[in-house]
Amino acid sequence: MEETSPPLESLLLPSIADVSVLSLDVSHEAIHIDVCSTAAGAACPDCGSESTRVHSSYLRFPADVPSGGRLVVLQLRVRRFFCPESSCARRTFAEQMPGLTRRYSRWTERLRSTLAAVGLALAGRAGARMARTFGVSISRSAVLRLLDALPEPQVPAPRVVGVDEYATRKGRVYGTVLVDVETRRPVDLLPDRGASSLAAWLAKRPGIEVVCRDRAPFFAEGARAGAPQATQVADRWHLWHNLGEAAERAVARHRPCLRVLVPDREGQADEPAPPEEKADSPWRSERFANRVRTRHATVHALLEAGHSRRSIGRQLNMTHRTVKSLADAAKPEDLFRGQWQHNRTSVLDEYKPYLDERWDEGCTNAWKLWEEIVPLGYRGSYGRVSAYLREKRTSPRPVTAQPPAPRVVTRW
Ligand SMILES: [Zn+2]
Image (cartoon, rainbow, N blue to C red; front, side, top):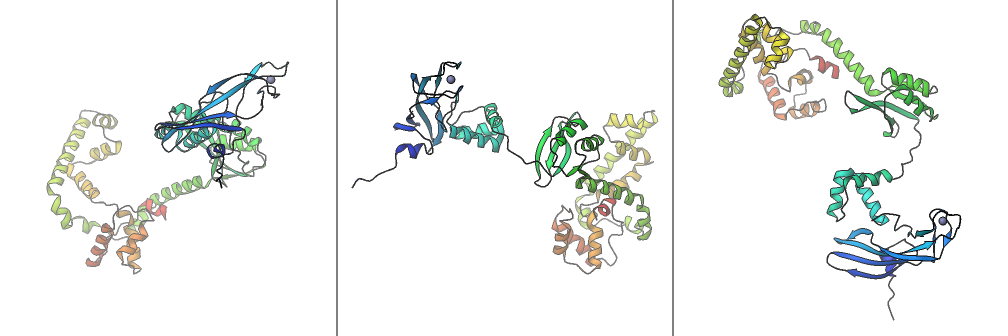
């Protein structure tokens, strides 16, 4: 009994109707598939009338999705028909095979959709490089044109819309981005950030119930004009941001109040540095001290010569703050002491008040405390935490008596 295998067409060109594979030629470089249409006729692309009157035929060679590392090239025998409609401006037309070809395309439809998918994932330049690895030569602008030709995805009108600005050139050109807050997906971009274009966009979508925005006046005005039915709310990021700023200002203003409550650090300032710092730094800090002395002398010489602080900063490429501290210090040693102390701060400092508090509560496990401060933003090593706790364990009095930094309080 003869075994029946499925026809070649359904293997090579599945889901494409009315085609016949005439031959298949596999070489080392490429697979050539000779294909023709089996349809009796074709419809005119202009008037739509069916025609079976063949004018002529020619060959097309659209590239197909590569297979097994080989290029796949179709050889299509395409017929040209007469348009039967006398009123139609078109006299002849070439047939297309639905799902396989389109006019003017050098790719089959499935290669085109593969390239579009590559483009969606990687965009122009990287998409073109990726396509080259599977043997399709395409320019990056052609990849972008493929994306451009894709149909717009249908997005339902949002109920809660977020409005914010985006920059195409930072500080110069801004547009408006609209986000569906419930799905967290951007739904549209407007080329400017004017109240009128936002109002026009909102007016076309009467289903909007909530507009989430920052406090920019043009967005407020646009939302009021375009969606009078909607509730306007400040978005969460701006609420947090404003609250954070206000809290930090308040804490900074009241920092002196905190300082009164904690014991004085004066006694500790003259204490020698911990042995490990002393061991590796004497000449390094001496060199550092010399640099500070030179800079101090330069700044004071320029001040005496009548230069302004601003001009000194420009000449010596120093920030305003650096110039100020150098100018304010009568002798370099004043400054050096400050710098030396500044040098000793560590990434752990911000978290010491927290560690002290937990220590006082009875939690002395370094690993556990390290795990607790990492979510609070600590970026340092576990070793620092354990060293700090070891110091606490061995020293009879509290190591830190600093009020928490305003930033730390703000984060709380
Ligand atoms: Zn026609």
